[in-house]
Length: 461
Image (tube, rainbow, N blue to C red):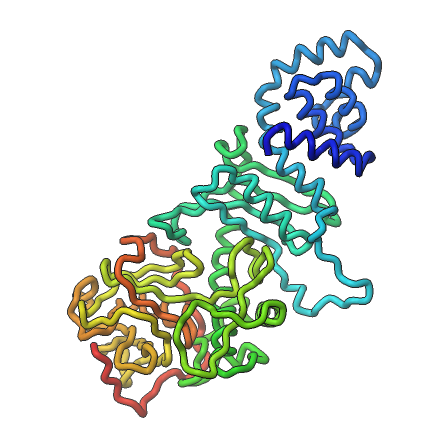
């Protein structure tokens, strides 16, 4: 908002809430900037101790000391840097001011009982701010306010590295701000973390980096778990009752094992996906053609997803995108590249189009070092597959008969990360030519037998 709009808004606000001292203080600041000093002083007196808290002194007129007023006026010139900080922080101060009054603030009925799974609700929410966004702090503020009472205890605003229209999950992360609820949530502590965004001396980011790193590891597990629940519903037309329903022997191995935290998170994620489907009805989940009888989980309509991420469709499952122009296979989530691998292809023999993983098998043809390597994933019941290879020199080349070849460590990570039923899109010229690898490999602990010794695979290797 520009200054005039801010003044009009705040004048209306203090009329409705004359006892709100923060409102008077902010209005006074805007009057001061507009050159209306007498009106500013009136507002500052109404602000009382809020003025004292932010200015670290008693307002001169409050004690009728004219000489102090003159000195106070002189000191304004020395406070230009502080003034810039206050201007940058106004949107964030409004967060603390308006969150309890937000009409979208969620309130449970008096007789409602909290769901048992709510104890697993996220403690940290991430606002991913686009690179093109010119007002990153305002963008983050809008996301937090829109979430209302559903906002986690702590929120971070982060800018991820972007390449060719894709956010890079493993690229450079730039931390902009942190907002933490205090007490009963009526007050929030703000920390500005980026010099360019706040025009100030930023706070220390070491603790935030550690917190974000831990959150990222858990987030990958949440994505795979939510994707597994999604595809179980699509494949079987019903919801799983427990995590073990997703981790079964071949050919029903929706997930390839159990990851850290999955069992604890399962009730919460399942409840959120059911809630989204019930509130939004049935729509497409990415436009992928699958067998009849499969059902879609409706995207979320709320501002915060099941995993503590704002303004994203986090009920949309992980997908695989293969770019035949640069020999890349990526695991993506809503224009974000989670993993990116170099692969071997078959030139024109590799078909473009939409497929899905119809089968996942460990050690195809009874071996982990044969022509198909240690893992294989059939595409839509065809002879095309994503699999390992005993010829690693073919990666990055067109030497297959149409299948997608991967290095051993890469295909084993992919096998664990994406569930049975995952959509696969083969295109030309859609992915960045390179991407930073993850520092840690994603891995599930196998629980069931995923081999298929009864079948001799004859994929178009």
